[in-house]
Length: 93
Image (cartoon, rainbow, N blue to C red; front, side, top):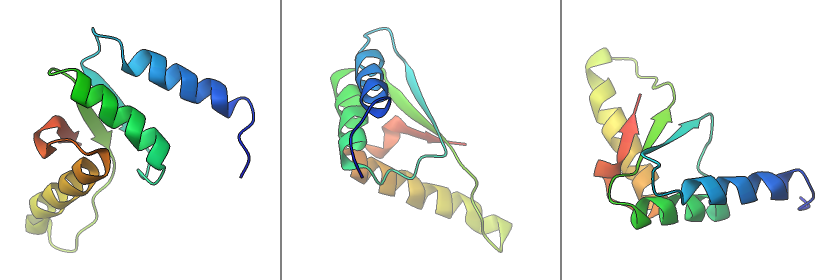
């Protein structure tokens, strides 16, 4: 994998906008949280602002519907750990 434009531009824009003090949510759709550098940027933004939360939009698949809340809680914990932030700062839809 090589770091060439436009990806560097997108990372720069993510950093710039995620550190905006007026920001209240970072909405994440279709991201697996497998990039440590991007996770670091998001985690830094959440840590820096006491009001900022990460809103993750992703499907949750469970055979039994009553297991969905536990699965969501597990995913929130996994994401919080990857971002190095408290799980209360993660919203999951």
